[in-house]
Amino acid sequence: MWQPSVAPGAVDRIACVGAGVIGGGWVAHFLARGRRVTAWDPAPDAGDRLRRLVDAAWPALETLGLADGATRDNLTVAATLEEAVADAEFVQESAPEDLGLKSGLLARIDAAAPPGIVIGSSTSGYRMTDMQASAVHPERLVVGHPFNPPYLVPLVEVVGGERTHRAAVTWAEEFYTLTGKTVIVMDREVPGFIANRLQEALWREALHMLDAGEATVAQIETAVTAGPGLRWPFHGPCTTFHLAGGEGGMAHALDHFGPALEYPWTRLASPALTGSLREALVTGAAQVTEGRSTADLITERDRRLIAVLRALREVGA
Image (cartoon, rainbow, N blue to C red; front, side):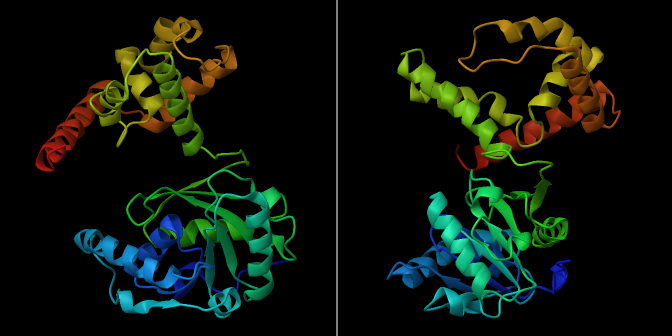
């Protein structure tokens, strides 16, 4: 049975394969957390471009606070992929979104990296089951999907493929968490994962409205940034709907607004509000809000909204 050879908290040497916007963001993040990073990218100017990216990110990382010993001097740019991963204790792959390219690259990384280390992929949509098809040791391959820029946005979505060992998923969750990330471990594979699918739904509807002449780009942007976007740093769509139900919470909101799911407000097909779906929403809202009263939630929401509004004013947004 496969087992990781290094504990998540003991990782010091990280290899980042692919040094574009996402890969470079990972490099900056890991350096800021005090790790040593070896990067490789096939582009001839990859080293210079990567260092410019890290330099640009560093002031923000200094503002947030660097880990002890964090320095840009811990970055090495390798001449070959094999050199980059030879002594790595974790590998983060961030190649372009091409299934054949990523599958072949992960197989190369798997062949060259030490046998007991976990290999994560930054893919924004592919299933690990499809990407690990050519690997000799697929059990250690996981998705570690970040959001741009990875050195600031905390979310990482982790999921394994059909041939991934559960220990690799557990290891990745702990490792990313220890580097300061907010980790979602998905229960099952789904193309696009969770956040991208939600983001894509909003994007698709925006395109529909723009294409039909129903809204301008400026109106769409303002509709989000001056409206629901203000709540999203702390309340997702389920908790927002729960609060829309007042004292009755999610149950009242579904009974009151539920029929609107059938209205043609969106070009996306809405699921039928079945009894099981209703129960899942009511139960989920109760779990997320942990039994707190509507009054307490509203007080917290308003306090956070004021803080966000003040922050936006400070930066002139």
